[in-house]
Amino acid sequence: MPAPSEPGSGRVADAVAGHWADRLAPAAARPYLRLARIERPIGWWLLLLPCWWSAALAAVAAENPGPHPGHLALFLVGAVAMRGAGSTYNDIADRRLDAQVERTRSRPLPSGQVTTRQAAAFLVAQALVGLAVLLQFNTTAILVGMLSLAPVAIYPFMKRVMPMPQAVLGLAFSWGALMGWVAVFGRLDPPALWLYAGTVAWVVGYDTIYAVQDIEDDEIVGIHSSARLFGARLRLAVGLCYALTVALFVPALAGAGAGLLGWVGLALFGAHLARQVALLSERDGARALALFRSNRDAGLILFAGLAADALWQGLG
Image (cartoon, rainbow, N blue to C red; front, side, top):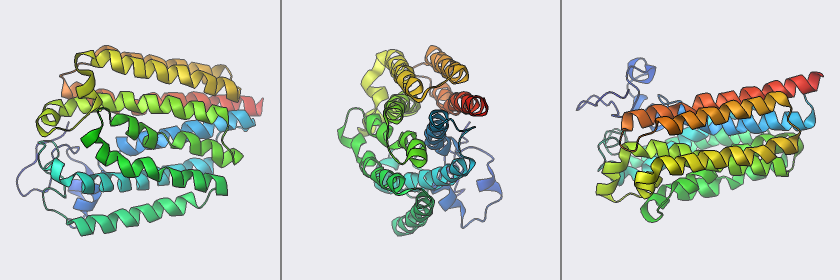
């Protein structure tokens, strides 16, 4: 659970208590690590998992014995770098709004731990790492990766004008579902597009759960979110998002030629999502945060099924 921040401590209220970023990192580096959300790996996991799903699905379709290990490693580095860059960019755009919300006012920018110029320089450095990773792939993958910058750029501003900004977040955070496939085949095919569409629905579902934490503050400040939009129908809405996720993944797996292990992975993934919906409460922020974080485990279950399927079929 996040620990409350103390004046002058530099600790961020919604950060993970006792993380090495607060205990071991040099004091001068800590604000930048917080900008990158390094103490909250769930963000880069959720950015990474669609990449790994796509890589594993492409391995199934190509009849390779498992996803390309080099691609998996590159996606990991890229996800950490680009999640940090995205979080830094979001904090720059939201610094005035964050100052009005209890959970976020202790973040580095609204609390004055770093200046906007320093944050912008850190953003560029992280983006350059992401670019270096992207340049390791084929030309089509590079072009597809570059296109992801459009939804990333507009997302922070959608919460001011759009009733459900999570839809734009879904477009951005799901991009990896295209990248693993295009890195293998050099083109986009229907299975990758189905996987992307289903991942968008997944992101909208889990980020709606995440937004439960801020419903009261968002209502005061005037920030839009799907949690506010759905209100008392929150559980139904998240359930529909998750059901759509699984439904859209079916043609993705079928089109790639998935075998039994892939379908078992999808079934277990769907069961995990159903459990989240059953436990969700629209006014229990602590439970919502735990359910949100559990999507890492759900995503790893699906990846394990797809990777095992690729290995089984590739060696068969």
